[in-house]
Amino acid sequence: MTNRHDSTAEPPPGPGEPPAVPLEFAAFCELHRPRYLSYARVWLPDQTEAAGAVQQAFAEIAVHWRELLGSSNPTAHAWQILRGTVSDHTRQAGPPARPHHPADDDLAILHYVVGLAAPEIADVIGTDTASVAGRLRRTMLREASGW
Image (tube, rainbow, N blue to C red; front, side):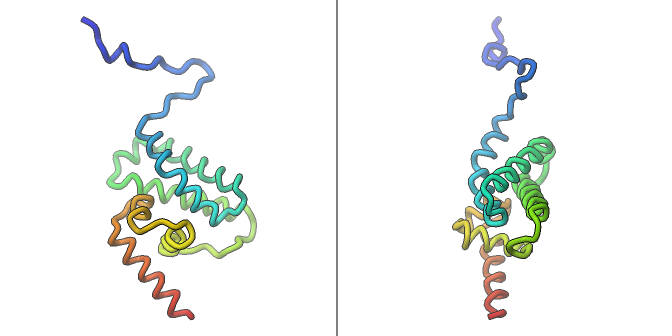
């Protein structure tokens, strides 16, 4: 009897070859990389540094991938890793071009600067659309009260 699972399995990586990336992790990266990069470019205007920060965040996410998948909200945990990595790169780059913003201000950045709608933001940060819409309203009201 032939085991069809063995016939379609890929061989293990050879010496010097990178290990195979889980399909779900590759899909996660494909989905989130453009949005993560757009966010990083707001904080790190140098495109190479922004791309490096996103790559570093994905490397950290990869290290914790199985653990993240077992959590209640993998996307939210991955977003926190990205935020932390970008923040670290911002501090290393010297005096920030803009002051560090709280998490709700990041939503405003994703909406007004990156151009994402509330459902897309919810998808990126791992929350629901209603929460994003409410937090965006609060941020806008807080900013308007300072005018």
